[in-house]
Length: 168
Image 1: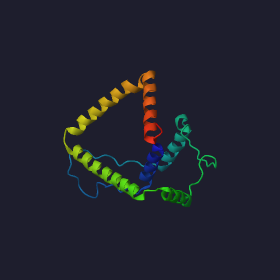
Image 2: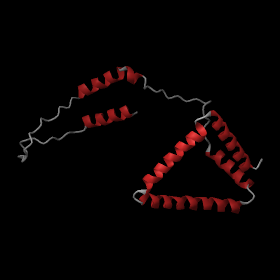
Image 3: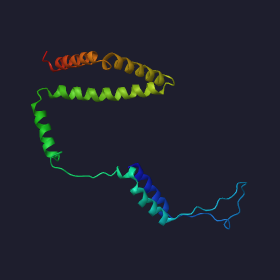
Image 4: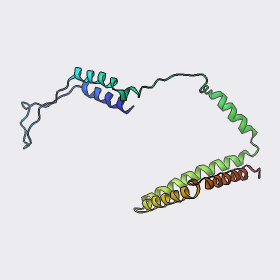
């Protein structure tokens, strides 16, 4: 993809009109020597693209797009809205849901303000990055490195899910 973007940019650079100043237009007041104008060769560019596609490294990058009915059914906006309407009608305390939703939006807004204020303090973001890196290292050592601790983490997560769902 990056190669395609760079070749398309190169192609537009080649085909764009190029106005180079000549020495007859204006005298130069520079101590640097003048460079000869660049040679733009369009046939050489097209042959280099042909040779590029024959390289084994780029032959592996070919992608074929296909459509399959089995992979993902098309989304119907009417079906999505009807499902949402059914779920909204099934909610008993609509005012509570709206209150929690509004509170969540306000909490996200306030947290973005706090993060922006903390980020503007000169040394604090780097210190917090180090704290986060240290905590991540501790978490990996404590819960992910050994098989027994991974099992312990899985049971803790399952018990938390049960508490949240109310089945425990």
